[in-house]
Image 1: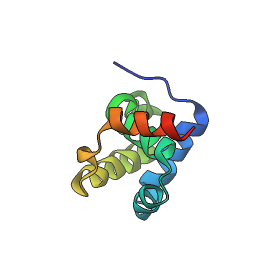
Image 2: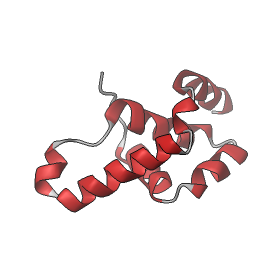
Image 3: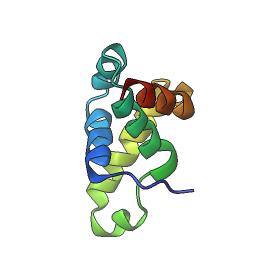
Image 4: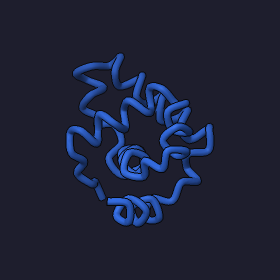
Length: 90
């Protein structure tokens, strides 16, 4: 099921994917909304396959960044728990 992220949330997720060290910073700073946006983007929204036709370089870059996210242990992040934490801190 594809979740609809706002453009700001998508840009936040893509920024963290592009700079993986920012995930650790966001976790340390308890920026749960940002981390939840990232995990939502990676797990539910993902990269549109249409992008492979329109911008192959960007598609490859995003796919590589998502692969790196998983290799660094990002798959262990619990989206539901992050959403709960984000709602509590709002």
